[in-house]
Length: 486
Ligand code: GLU
Ligand code: ZN
Image (tube, rainbow, N blue to C red):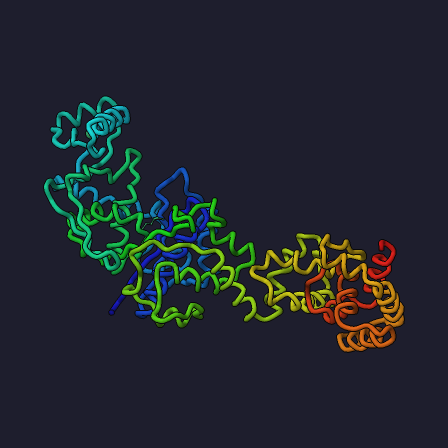
């Protein structure tokens, strides 16, 4: 496919959501697969809800995911500006043209009038729509209405009795009856264009060839097609991607868990995991594999394998995938991502020294295998912090503490620990062995007793690593404390 140009056009009315991120990703994969261009522009015609902060946050999330763009906001290009607010002058001649040809007209109906019309239609079980009261106002009518101070909107005159066809690359042929649409607003009374109008002008003037977006915009598409036709623009290809549902099959919302990309970022998900996961929400490559580095996604992506049925967001799968990427990541990177969480939990200083950081890396390495996302790290590494421990209230723990040999094991090990200023994994292994030999104890009564007394838990990181990283002094202190509370 040649000269592919796609776009992602977020409204800066909130952070980047999972659904938006998935749309951005599909556009990006499509552009990269065909060697095309990705454009990012901002749809900020909702003056009340759009903010610069949200815009920055969205762009930041895109960058974090690695979804770079070739043209648009922040990078520039020959079709700018890339914010709709800054394009109002560009839209004007097209509105004038539609007004001149009669394909659009001024409507002076008040909010109350429209509401009354809507209610009447609903009461008759008809589709609520504008019935065209101002369609045929004369110049004189309009002058009078203007003189009375009414600010008109501009409506698009929808042709009657037409079947409008969306030839969707994902959903196939979808038909809409023009009679159900009603003349819709293209310019609001404050002079700001509506989404349906501005999006068409932007897409057409920016030479967008393929529009990949969420299914929620399918019903807008016939209106947009009418505008393309009225202005003699070439129609792009449309592909509407299915909704993302929660596991209970209702529309994905906060109640199912985090819905924004920043939240996943803050929770310590890796961007490559999220990208891999989102790519499989509605698209599936051939075969059973699920782990794909991004270059694989790019080479395999095609709209042919984008599904019509809704995609279900499976958190367990996301965590599983993220755990995979955490295991593959370098310990330096994983530690860096865990650090803010561990600091926030008050376990290490905010101005951590290089030595302490090197130690923390070894600590994090002991839990790297278990980590699903970095916000879990404080709980997993907690056992490495503090002078004393509380024993978990568990049957296994009670049993091991009640063993006849346990006090001697703990005492002897404590005495030996006190003879070291420092030790490493090998010394620890050696020392435990000696304790076992001297007392004639091995296996669980030895290792479990020490583990429980030092960590308070019957499970956890590798015992040698735990003891080595705690250091002999702290191990001795914890043993002392546990012995006292027995
Ligand atoms: N601003 C729209 C949205 O965020 C984009 C719609 C479109 O892609 O046409 O939903
Ligand atoms: Zn009207």
